[in-house]
Image (cartoon, rainbow, N blue to C red; front, side, top):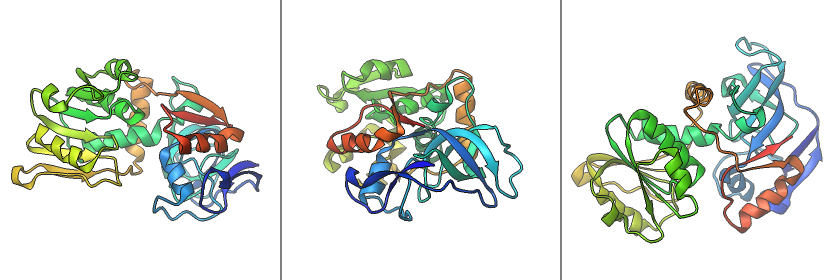
Length: 309
């Protein structure tokens, strides 16, 4: 089968398109004929050796995947050959940038039926990140106020959609380029962070501050004053310490996405119910993945890119 792999960490040039043996599923595993994988910034971090995730070399990137089950390992009872599935694969194992991938059965759920199977690969890790940041770590509940700093990215728009579904008032920052998409996601107030100081624009403290932007530590620390006493600051920027305020009982939490099959199944249900929009900005072929990594290395990739097989 065809796969994209790297045998050593380094720049995009370490990625190779290779013919490798098709994997066989072991106990508790299934083999998926890949429809698509998704590019995430963490793929570049693992390839470059910046993320402390213990991958075994050579490694196939692409931990978000969609496809069709074509073989079962021993002990798999709740999935069947022919099932269309989507999953967030263990990041340390081979991913979906290949024609086939072996995955733990517990990493997969039934794919959405309302969108193309290829596009479903864009859902798992980013939507799980938003849910975990807001609900599991942020403890956000109906009637509260949320400030999303950096809502113009993919995770930010999922966060806005999920927060509005919870019955939350959402204030979001975005650039002029993404402001309309953030409004469409449901934000009650959109602040142009390129021209407006948040401290003047936010007229009432929030219960949860979700930071998704690569900001300076001093700027981040100043934002904590916008959170009410007893509130929470949540951030997905793992390289930056998340500030809190012990004197006001403002809790700090840093989120790194975790596998959660039940939550992923719920997110799929929201997609099929029309309550959650799956963003796909671009679709590329597997052969073009090394060039995409090079593009990401040169500058930030806007939106969500899926890699079709």
